[in-house]
Length: 327
Image (cartoon, rainbow, N blue to C red):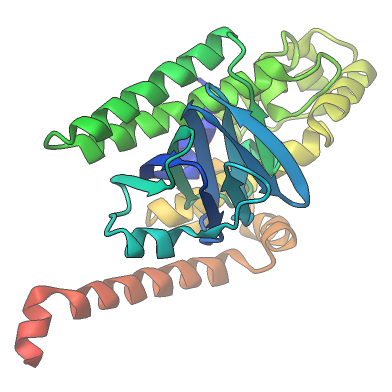
């Protein structure tokens, strides 16, 4: 099993190309749009990113990944006044997902911007270990060149505007997300840990693979240590140091994440789901689930169903046929 792929699938990543921004100085953009994530790549030129009281210079080939819907500003100079991006689109007749030309007659800069959404965040480990602002410079690292090449391909698709270019750009953005994660891991100092680093660890990686592949197995720290070919104490210390939590705590969190995913995607009984994630009784599963999620499995499932029914009702009310019948 590819643990990263498995975790990314459970995230239910939704990527949307926000636009190819052809900018010329002076220009300034303010982004406070509530998206869970943003990706900006500098295809040409350079600019300043201002976020969380920090000012970061961005050059051609650089990219930055912003998590948590953090408001931020992009501009050619710290002295240029920024305006909300939706207002700029509206004023210039642009369309989200298309090409926007904005600014004066100064130095040109091209930005490729995507927004990211995650339906299956729950207790997923992918996002837990990422910083809110992830900046990688286009310095020739192999993965960085992959990112740059993909960005240029997206830019070319959007510029050509051929039929289906939005779908192509969106699929490429999904690939870009994975390349971004890989590049981030490669740029980490050797002493830094984290879940993504643990995936490539020669001793911890195989353990994570087994935990994801068989969450229902009656795991013990001793059994995990044998897979890692380490002593129990050394394995527990290494796992804690790299991933930031104990092996059993990680296992429990992944089991709860898997259970929540199965509830969202199937009509399996709660008993079957409990067994699938390693619990022999509903009561034992229920106690752990409530401790991690804040509500019982039954209450969580009812909430999911109510949410689905609400979305279906909204879709029906908004459909052309329903509008015609009300006319």
